[in-house]
Length: 227
Image (tube, rainbow, N blue to C red):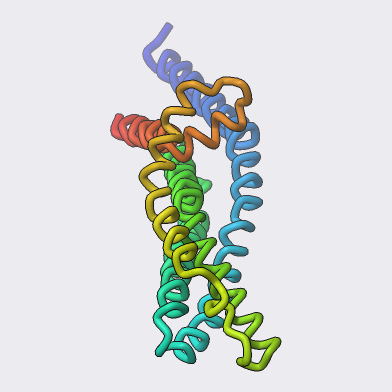
């Protein structure tokens, strides 16, 4: 066998290997990337809804807070709801930007790292929504009831005048204390509750266990890209 013949055989073998690798990449794209892309596109609906909802809330609260700027009893809960809406709006926009910036044509490791990064963002958002929901929800209830009765009675009935101030203060304190207490309690229940997988998943999200695992996945894919 001559050297020229041997080189031709090596070239043919290289072409076959390249074709095999190309086929494997296509199969991986069809089996993994395309389903993940459809799933991510569906998940983008919720951040879009959150953006629209927060925009409406901020528009309504802007004029409402200004009209009641002399009454701290309504300004304080209104500002808390406004702050919560701004945080949710910013985080939802950030998630939409992450989805829009996903490069589905890049390496699988880079795509998986981006997907895990998006999972980290969603877990973190869910965690803070749950922990802040008692405080923000109660403030939203006060603002909503005050605005509703003020509109129905043309300003003759102010609901805050009818509510016990001690009850309002107690709910504020509960909402603030629920953030550390809920985080601590979720960690305990996540270690002890094994009855329902979905309930365990919720507790892990609140306690930060799922967030820690998701961050480790991001770091693992980042390390793989270095090789």
